[in-house]
Amino acid sequence: MEQLLSVLVVLVLVSFCRGWEAPDFCHQQQCPQYQVVGSHQGFEERLYVATDWISTKVESTENSAVMAAHSRLKDYCQRQKAAGNEISTDTWPALITVSGGEDGLDLSMSWFLPPGTMKPENTDPSVTIQSRPEATIYVRVFGGTPSISIGQDNAKMLREALDRAGKTFDHHTYIGAGYDPYLSVTHHNEIWIYAA
Image 1 (cartoon, helix red, strand yellow):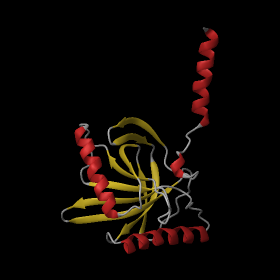
Image 2 (cartoon, one colour; image 1 turned 135 degrees about the horizontal axis):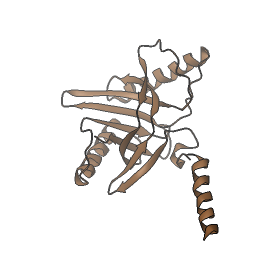
Image 3 (cartoon, rainbow, N blue to C red; image 1 turned 60 degrees about the vertical axis):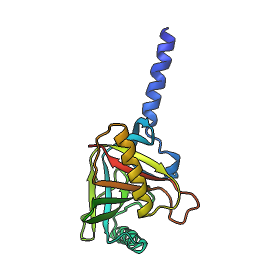
Image 4 (cartoon, helix red, strand yellow; image 1 turned 60 degrees about the horizontal axis):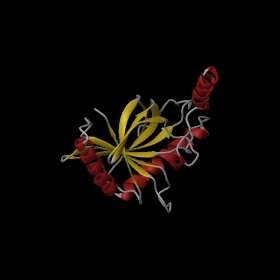
């Protein structure tokens, strides 16, 4: 019995010491750590650790506006690198946050900053550095080439699944998370909605 107990203790300690292993859809790049709290019909419930992001406004739902936001973040990272501040661009996911409703949508694009990234003093008013606290997030996974309209459809499906499950959640904001380059043959996409 003591031997069995010793083996179990060792296995538990080894699992904690190994650290977090990113899922395959992160493509061996850094992405935010989370723990799956529950799996439900149509969504997964995850607990994310506190994270940092660089963000910029997306001016409209047009693809050209999304590409312009992407270019702003990329240029910002290159300027920071030239100034001696290393900001990794080898991270996933890229986020599109959609807030608002009938009066119009507010959109922003964000890139994940890995833990330990030195956050430089920001002199670019078009880019912000955001810290997001630990949070429970409801996640719907879907494939295909992402777009704002496909994200809206999947956000609607996630909200319906959350209502059926009796979950309380943010009704005004959702986040589209993409883990692949836009021109990739396959895509792992997610819709995130924060628990209320």
